[in-house]
Length: 199
Image (cartoon, rainbow, N blue to C red; front, side, top):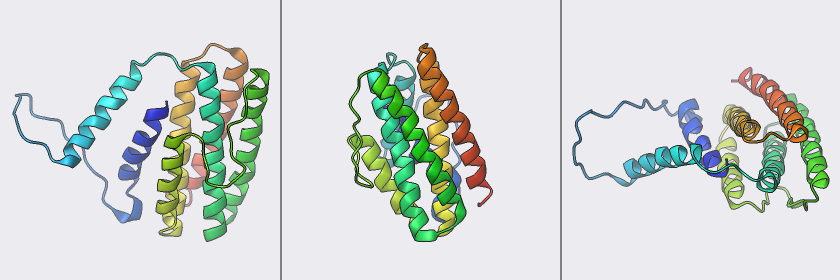
């Protein structure tokens, strides 16, 4: 789940065409093997695909790793919406922001249940997980370019959350955790609809 978040973000960002860039079209490679030297961009794309495939076959994420990552992922949404809401205004960010605080509380209850320490910083935009820190920085940079791009960032966050929550749901059989994950995914689906209406 961790590696796939930034990969998912970069792929989705290309697809939704942030800053008006035309969506990339991925074509299939020729069946016959051809030895061609790859540019840095091509190597990166190949590496991303390989990383996604490796992630699909990686061992099940531990409950501790899952919950520690999840609460900071919810904080990321909260912090991004805080900054973009203050920058661009609008009820969409304000309304969803309140929901993201509730999501963090729900995951915090799970942390307490399993005796785990809360990894969150009280400072906006500061994360313990380096991957989430990098993703936050990327999303803020994208969202500051225009109001429409800010809404696209909202779409990107919710799509990423839904993908990560679905993966988490499929990787655990704990009924207590599953109940919370399903609530969070349902809320993210509602948020996604709200942001899509603004684009």
